[in-house]
Length: 222
Image (cartoon, rainbow, N blue to C red):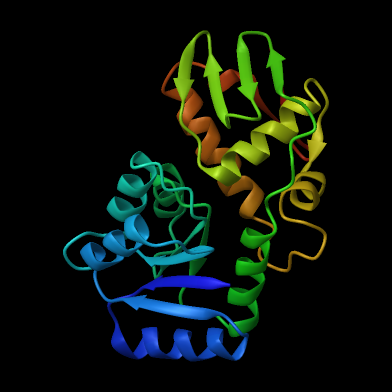
């Protein structure tokens, strides 16, 4: 498996490179946003680890511009910031997951495993929930004819909710379906992704389609 690591701190980059290589990953290191973006657009990687605080082009910009260029490489955002707003901003930019520094080797490896296994074939071509249309093959979402851009993991969360439209799904059900039963990261990840999706729906006055049922979970309605 090929990993692109975009990290400007030389000591951190070397430490992450060594621990990933012990896990049999092939690692290419880029030390600023421009170098990392160039690597993403000119080479093929199975996953990218992108630090937020990069020189020349920050991690948010790298992720956003890579997605705009059609790059679908799964991206793990690496950050020292623990505010929910920063996590949501990273997901909005196109990242698929995030990891807060400092972290332990086992958690990083678990996050990478989760990203690398998220490629099952969709069970249906599309889901229609009222005026919400999810095209599973094209990985697109439209609401009342308006396109909504979702990161890969956001799409999988919404796809699972659409497949069970009108049914309240618990956080554990969503976690097990989207991240897998072996996921050993924070269980708050579901709330973070739901917040990111709702933020995008709110931009087109459709946030009420994603309903929180307090103490139980979430459901998608028409």
